[in-house]
Amino acid sequence: MFRLDHKIALVTGGGRGLGRAIALAFAEQGADVAVTSRTPEQLNEVAELIRAQNRRALAVECDVSDSASVAQMVETTRQEFGRIDVLVNCAGVGWAEKLAEMSDGTFDWIVKTNLYGTFYCCREVLRGMIAQKSGSLINIASVAGAKGVPGLGAYGASKGGVITMTKALAMENTRHNIRVNAIAPGYFRTDMNSAILDDPDAGPKIVKRIPMRRAGDPKEIGGLAIYLTSDEASFVTGEVYFISGGEMAQ
Ligand SMILES: NC(=O)c1ccc[n+]([C@@H]2O[C@H](COP(=O)([O-])OP(=O)(O)OC[C@H]3O[C@@H](n4cnc5c(N)ncnc54)[C@H](OP(=O)(O)O)[C@@H]3O)[C@@H](O)[C@H]2O)c1
Image (cartoon, rainbow, N blue to C red):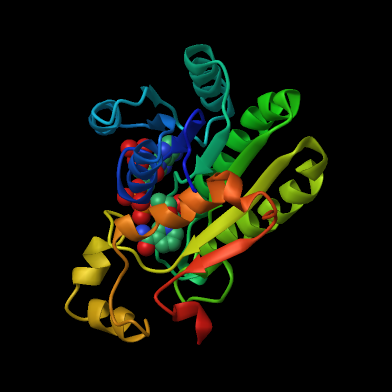
């Protein structure tokens, strides 16, 4: 069960953090994987690790907030692999600032990357999936997309949008045999938030709000992504899976 042999996966934000962990977990289960972000050195390193597992890999640069760049990236991936069976939208940016103090530019940057980026990638990949009548999309949302977190208003709005878009995409595509689900992480230790987790004042306060009293390790997200991608999840669509050390149960 849960093998991904013969599946072609595309993971945005696959150069580091949660995307990297998901890309490597997919390869371990037998998938060929394309990874994309704006930092080729990180992508090439992940691609090498995937090839070391005897899987095919592709590192392709793309800015997900630019629809032309996304179209080019998806086309390159299709040309290399012939098809895309799985898309994980993991590229994203985090920023903590009260909405009353936030500039237009910061709000635009967060929403353009997290929400528009997810839209652009889903749209491009869906065209091929609809034609091939199969596919699975996983959008990485956040706990902050489902509850009000002070300082994370813009980020939470972008991720709340991702959750709602996931459900709509699921409804629009069941007839095409395409499943669409979201994973909504709580705090995981990655470049995005290691500074705040290590902050002597803010870090302990964050950890105290997590029932398990620790941040997640990126390795702890791969299993859920594998399940949602696998044929074992064939009846699962339009769902949002929280993975937060108990934070969402409070
Ligand atoms: N870590 C957490 O606690 C946590 C919690 C909830 C949700 N999430 C979500 O999980 C996802 C991954 O986050 P992470 O913690 O792994 O952060 P990370 O280590 O900072 O990785 C973010 C990834 O997204 C890519 N990215 C950012 N902007 C991009 C753009 N415009 N175009 C293409 N790629 C872009 C980055 O690559 P480049 O910068 O090199 O382009 C990087 O590969 C994000 O969507 C985040 O919101 C994380």
